[in-house]
Length: 187
Image (spheres, rainbow, N blue to C red):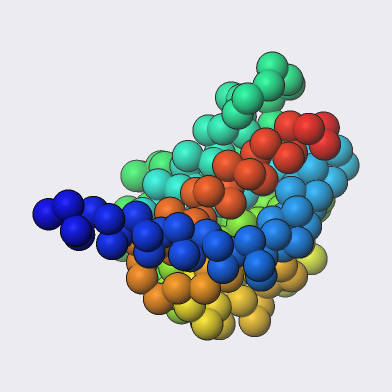
C-alpha cells in the first residue's frame, strides 16, 4: 500500500516538474487574459464534465469569493451547476449541446471562456468553444496528453504532459489556483 502511495505521489510530482519546464508561460498568459477580461467588464465562463466540472465550479468559486486576498468579487460562472438547464438541453437537444447553448445564451463581448477536458476530445466542450469562437470571445483550454481537438481550437491551451486522468486533473487545479492567485495580484 505504501509503495502505491509513494508511486502516485512521485508520478504527480513528475507531471508538475514537466509543467515547470513547459507550461509556466501558458499559466501566466491565462492569468493575464482573465485579468484583462475582468478589467474590461467581462466575466469568466468555465465548463467541464465530471471531475473537470468540479474543477470549473471550484475555480469559479475562488474567483467570485476570494482566493487569498480580500478584493471585489470577480464575475465567474461554471456552466455545470444548473441541473434544470443541463437536463433540459440534454433531453431536448443533445448532451453535445449542453454547454454550447449556455455559451450562446450567456456569453457576451469581453468574456473569456475556459473549457476543461482531460482528453481534449469531449464533444460538448468542443462545441461550446466553437460557439465562443463564433462570438469572437477569447478561449482557453485546460487539457492533457496531446491536447486533442480542444488545444487546436482555443486561443490559449494549457496542456498537461500526461495521459493519466488523475494526474491531469491534479495539474489542472494546481494551474487554476495559480491563475486565481495571479488574477488577484493583477487586479
